[in-house]
Length: 84
Image 1 (cartoon, rainbow, N blue to C red):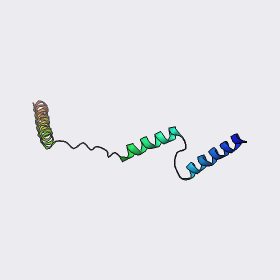
Image 2: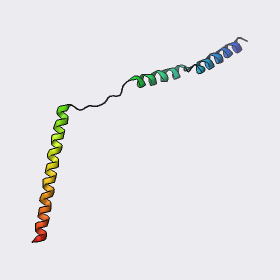
Image 3: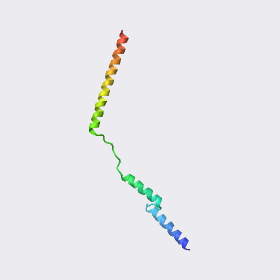
Image 4: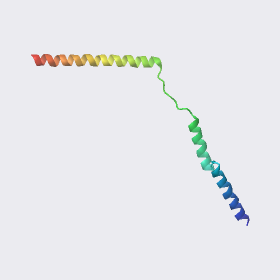
């Protein structure tokens, strides 16, 4: 009789925990705590250092200029060979 009452109480408590949205066992509680902790942490946004950004911009401009000069030089060579 005691076992039946105990199991009925356990089922009642378990269903009550489900109805209020709380986990009913240790593993589910741990998972819920971990998920809440991960959700609360703001995501890091990598903002580059302004000096790094200006350096990378300068390098990009130099590389673009070199590419343009070599492209023009190559076209001039092709046209001079084509004309001669």
